[in-house]
Image (tube, rainbow, N blue to C red; front, side, top):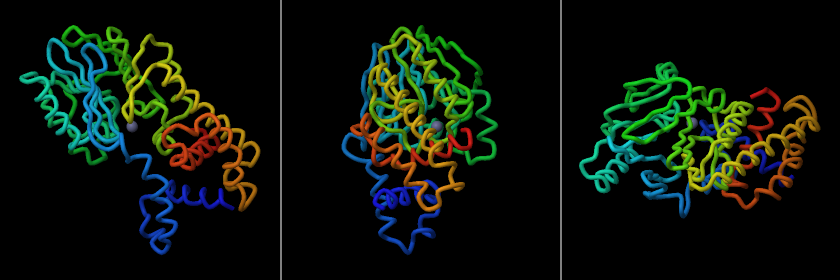
Amino acid sequence: MKSLSFVAAGVCVALASCSLTSTLGNSPFVLKTVVKTVEPYFHGPGIDGMQFDKVGKRVYTFRWNWYRNLIIDTDDGLVVIDPMNQQMAAALRTELDGRFPGKRVHSLIYSHYHLDHTSGGAALEPLNVLAHEACASYWAPLDHSAVLPPTRVISGDTVLTIGSVEIRALHLPNSHTDTLYAFHLPSERLLFTADLGLVRTMAPGGVPDRYAPGYLAAMDRLIELDFDTFVPSHFGYGKKQDLVDWRNMMEESRRLARQAVKTAGTPGIANAGTQMGKYFDAVYDPLREKYGHWHGFNEMFVLNLVRDVLGESLGY
Ligand SMILES: [Zn+2]
């Protein structure tokens, strides 16, 4: 029963987070449980606040709460990958003005179309804005008023040489939207990824907008590259091995969910009343044994489980 109530709380977050008040308004206990369960994943010491770090000869990373982007200091000006949001872009602008006085942002590059990565760029006053050519069609029906429009669109793998620094933009279709790029800087032996890989941290909410087979293929492709430093767009940065470990965690989670669906059936089809508990029991212990010490293991477990079980059953 203990595991079942935990599952129920997580499912409420997964399915009804947008209408918590109406769904859970009469149930402060459940509401408190839900908030408590997820809150420490996104907030806490070492997560809240800002930090600007040097991670290569000409490369820097700026963390603003759980978001992180990349700054490259080239001969022709600065390159920024992802402004994220208006507050973060404004804070970054202050940092850049202080650290690189008089140096303009030559290029702002969007890793993918998602609004939480592409808003607020105007604060950086970039000379050029680059994005995948499909971004515009995703933005069109959304409120994208905070997104500075691209001045140049790209498609497929694209080598960008800016101020004598080679930036390899690697297109990763069918992974996390078909507009996703990772960025490899061979001279810095560094890889930056957006919403693809974390350092000893569980995935948030199953990674929204993810096609699992393409996502795994994207990670496999990146792991083949020659690099040492791995900078993901959330939480801490690390080494290549951290991306390898994360890829293996995602594959293991998925494998366990696949097995659980085989044993307990597709959601809603069999085992009425006990099905979520069976999924939980099949996945929790084996995964905790390997990854229980990673950030967010308990906070995100149920959301990730629900995502994997549905993904295995529906094919995404
Ligand atoms: Zn995203």
